[in-house]
Each structure stands twice: as C-alpha cells, then as structure tokens.
Amino acid sequence: MSVKGHTKEAAGFIKEETGEMLHNEKMAQEGRDLRNEGRIEDGKLPKMHKPGTGHPEEPEDEAGPGDI
Image (cartoon, rainbow, N blue to C red; front, side, top):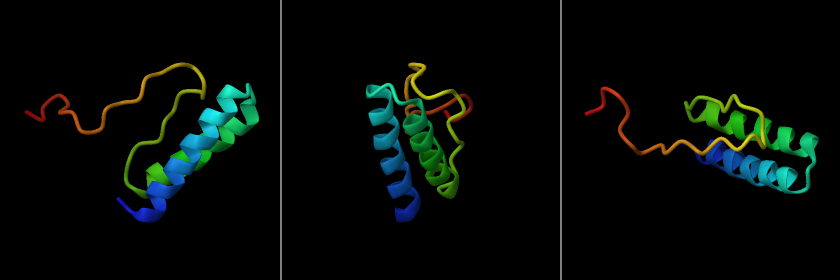
C-alpha cells in the first residue's frame, strides 16, 4: 500500500462521510472519487455504490472464498 494512495483514500473517506452528514451529495461524491483514486493506486477495487446508501464496509483482512 502506497502512502500517497492510503492518504487519498483516508482523505476521501473523511470528505465523503462529512458530505453525507451535511446531506451534501456533491461533497460526498467528490470524497468518493478521491477515495477511489487512492484505492486504485493501491491496487484495490473502487467502491461502486452511491455514497450514503448504507452499504457496510468490506473487511479487507478476512479470508474470502477459496482463500482457506
């Protein structure tokens, strides 16, 4: 994980959550875009659902199907 990608993902998360709390869809989407930019830099898949829809975070360190 790169420091730059991790920082973008963290900053995007904060901006996205702040936008959701303020009911500001534009701010939430800007945060999601920044967050996804950082995730892509780190080789992760971008989050595809719309910000504020209540989807839970995916635990990244749990074993998935076929990882056992």
